[in-house]
Structure formats: structure tokens, C-alpha cells
Length: 361
Ligand SMILES: [Zn+2]
Ligand SMILES: [Zn+2]
Image (cartoon, rainbow, N blue to C red; front, side):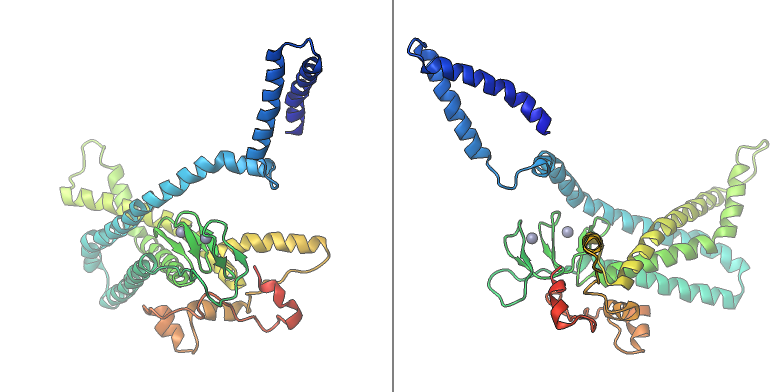
């Protein structure tokens, strides 16, 4: 970049010097003198308008990509509604296939205890998926109070121009600061933050569980349906009724959709489970990684100030205080509030008075 600048500015400066030399001589025409004065004036104007003490290649790249960021933010904002409708339609189609195509088939072949088990498990799983998805899209993630207050803050948000508490980050899609922000999820059309992080994770977990259950449970039916579809173009063609053909295609669709979602969402769920075990959010993962490298270069060790230990991190995240809560708050639908207010955080036992400053992340 510097080489390019010097290549452009070099000849311009040379021309200016020649003009200046000519301009100071009495025989120089007034037109040329005026041109030199205008050049000087223009240069001062340009410098004063474009002056930036933080200017650099990063600022130039950010400014150049600003329209792209704006476009992506707006597209995600508007497509959020489409994604939510897509989740509801796809989940609804799987439930409809299970009732209309799978149920009549297994009623004829499965034993009563096996049917009972499938009936209870599938409905328990479905209720948890619907409950957590509804809560995740309708629960606000939590926002810091605006205006005068006594809360401890760590910085000022450059977009909102308001103080930011620890773990709070600005969401450019929602266009506001979010408490303990994890990420903006287009599939929820909502930010994942302090108040709905548990709903988001539980939805991912129970949806993965449901997809694994559907693809594993329908494996035999899928194989039979797939083999039947392959015989459609044989001569003489097999005699299948319209209902049977629809059932075959629906079973193949169910198996492929559930298997792909189980793989993709399963990987995402495992990744979030790792982060929760470490007491980190997706954003903090990047911040902590940078901080770890920075301190490592100085021969020091970084410790996450929000890591209370693997089991305690899970208990805090799920809001489990007693043994009974694992059943009532995790395995059954529960709309209990998370621990804390998302504005200030209890330091873990290992944080001593001298290291309390590390809380400012
Ligand atoms: Zn903000
Ligand atoms: Zn957001």
C-alpha cells in the first residue's frame, strides 16, 4: 500500500515543485499562480476532511466493506422470518409423515410394549422440541439498561454509545447490545443471549435426539421403501397403489432429512456443549483465544474468569440447584430464569483479589 502511495504522490509532488518554482517568479502568468494556490487549498481541505488518527489499511478495508456488511445484516434480518417458517414447515412435515405413513405400518407389526415405548418417547421428545423452540424465538435475550445506572461496565459500545457490562456485545443485526451474547441465530430470528441461551441449546439437543431417533427407527422402513421405488421402472411395472407410492417417497424424504439434520445439528450441538463445559460463549471463544496467545507470548497463562469447572458450568447454565432439578428443569419443559441478571458475574473461587481485573472481558 505504501509503495502504491509513493508511486502516486512522487510525480504529483514533483509537478507541484515545478509549479511552485514557476509560480514565485514574477514572469509566471497569474493563471498558473492561481492554479498553485488552488492546489494548496485543495490539499489542506482534503487532509482536514479525511484526517483520522486511527487511519490505516484496516480502516480502509472496513470502510470499503461497509456496504457488504449492511447488505448481509439486512438479508439475515429479513430472511430470519423465512428460516423460522422453514423450521416449522419441515418439522411439521416429519410429524405428519410419522402419523400418516409410519404409524399405520408399525401398528400392524410392532408388539404392544414396543408401541407404548415409541409412543411415550416420541411425544416426550416432540413436546420438548416445540417448547424449547417456541421459548427460544419468543424470549428476548436480555439487553443492558440504557441511561444512568450503577451497574459495573467494562467499555462503551461504539454503536449504541452506552456503557457495556461484562460479556455484553453489540449485535449488528438486532442493532442493539445483548447480555452475554452468544450469536445471532437466523433459524430463531433472534439473538442468543443470557435469557434464551438454555432454550437454544435445549432445542438443538432435543432436535438432534429426535432426528437420530427418526432416522435410526425408520431405517428398515426406509430400505424397504427405497427398494420399492427402484422397481417402479421395471417391466412389467409393479402394482402399487397411489397411497403406497406416496408412503414410499415420504419415508425416503423422512430418512434423508432427519439424517442430514442429525449430522449438521449434532455437530453444532457438540460444539456448543464443549463451549458450555468451558464456561465460554461463541464470541468469548475468539476473545479468549486471542488473549491466550497474547499472554502465552509474555510467558503467562490465561484462565477464563467465567469458568466455574465443567459440572458447575452445566449446573449454572441449566439452572440446576438440586438433584430433582435434573428431572424437572432439564428433562421436562421448564421456563425458570437463568442464574444472575446477566449484568454482573460472581467470580469463580480461583479468582483472587489481585486477579479480579481479568473479569473485564
Ligand atoms: Zn451496542
Ligand atoms: Zn441479534
